[in-house]
Length: 395
Image 1: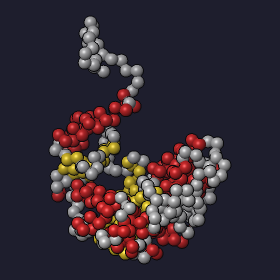
Image 2: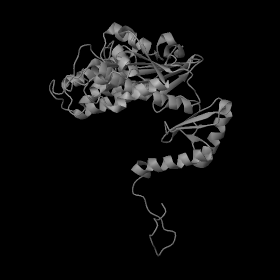
Image 3: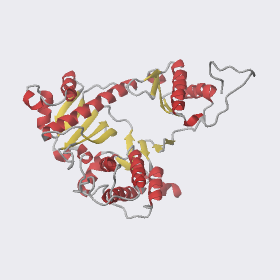
């Protein structure tokens, strides 16, 4: 390391001796990010404002997009020569290692075919099952038992709190390709401060469900329409301790699921309509961000996003500002929905509760309803025999 400015030494050509690696320092990632961003900007790439890890360049057949996570780089382009020139430039600047076509990225397995792209985390899921000793357990048909209610102090506290925290943390990353366990993990993550035996049993039930299909993932079909279809729902006052509601939404680009969330609301809602209205505000914010991101990827939305809600009162509040008496206590940011409706970004549509896809993000469902819920998400088991997985490759 070069000597810092202002340091004077009688001996020439002195350097600093490192006592620890710079890679683990807090400043290392920021310095590396600045250097890598500067190199890409020098190649006339444009950094996305909606997602700083995305860089784009060109348009049409010469368009290229680069996704970065620390020192892992994922380029894509319809013109392979654009990717080759980028690799040569980065190799001359940083001496990169070319891993070829996309296979694994951040622990996510990607498998492309003529019909589309499948993303799953089978190896990661198997590692979790092996570490916890559930590799030979009896599979479960759903991640959470219907009617179960978890709360603080509902049973004896567990002796090893670290094991529960480590398990929930690993399961949180698994939700990157497993939207079917999003609600269950959202519930379990609320008790990492003081987990009990009942909470650990619920976490073990999730592991039994993962054992049923560890290769379950998301499938993105080719040639889909670019229409945004959005479903959102809320479960009013479902938390027995705080009486707060649960917000759940899922965003589809055509039939491909691209975004989802299950989260407890930050405030208490006085009615189910208000809970739905708050859920719609969170959903519209996500739709706005996705619209910006698709615009950076040169995908223009020709029609407003179709947002489906099973509460007609929430739709009336969003479309009609006359309901002042019902909404005067609601924060200003929730009225973002009215503004986006008037701007034509979204179109609120009514849907029956039986056809509400986001219902599985707000509550544990019975097995028949849960199977219907997962079928609507477009998930697929890459390693199942019906999809030509491992059994076909071993022949």
